[in-house]
Image (tube, rainbow, N blue to C red):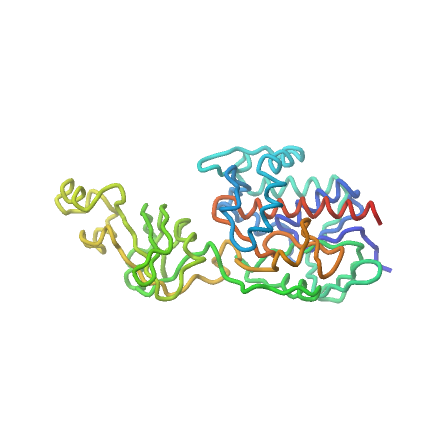
Length: 373
């Protein structure tokens, strides 16, 4: 007979690891197992924040989120940034706040976050099983049985599904599992992603160039979104945080207008430069953007980049299908966290904050249920 755990955590990413740590503290580590499909846990976590792990933002508020925000607000209010940071300090991770409220580990290395989570799990005696891709989940009178692709079973009283979305990897493992529990999935879309444009020859000539700009997304002449930041020109389109922020709304045929000199009006710029851009812009931009277009350098949207290039998945399980602790209303004693749910945030630590918040919320709810059973 396979060992029976109190809690099986499916997915060794951000929410899975933190949820497992908190559950192991409350339930005892020997009662918790983390099931990870990859050869090691935390692969996606290591890539966050350009390898520095922007783990939260001091400016967290519901306006920075999308999807089922009305229901998400209660969780975000219960787990504000100070509470998340206090918990990280509790497990030995020191953090520092930098520009725009972004918070990073003090080491400025994502590996530090992963290392402290794994070390804490080990100290608590929780089990970490990698190369265990859960393919089916069955509810039983005593809890759940989860089967790997090799049909190896794991039995647990409770389960937390923390598989994340399809961003970065393109893996959709978590969605079949939640469907097996009776959940539906809203349409999925890459969010916080580069945007491919139709003017491929123009962007290829600028490949590798970075330039600060004011950016406007337009449809039929109507402004849909305005932002500012550093635009990166790539082989197929535009990238950078300010472009990522447009990905949710951008549709084929929309126009992206770049103001490459946002600090000057056209007349001020002409007076200051005599109509020459050599002393203002990167050489490649001078060669490919005539002076009269530098305040309105336009590209036509082809499409948003694929999930493999996206930072986060928009869409997921509606929050109307889980309770305030993220417990499934379709399959009791199963919890869903993080990117699996129909909530995603802006750039700047908001998505990891959602992952941590839902994980802690779920882990503490599991403990309460265990106490009552």
